[in-house]
Length: 72
Image (cartoon, rainbow, N blue to C red; front, side):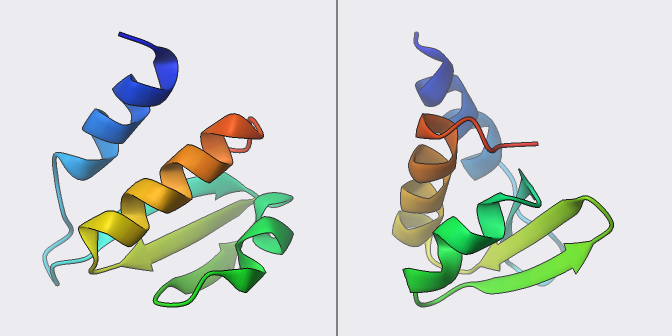
């Protein structure tokens, strides 16, 4: 299994108590995420927290961030 597939499985296997998928990215990833709709982006220090309720959007975000090595 590739690293990207492992990240996708890991992040999509659980949700927070409000039902959101939570993805942690480096601060530089915020610019990459600007064009994606359906996500909530919060900046906390050097980490960006990406939250979405959609599984397909979460998978898209994970693959995009993993491809650019921006997952935290």
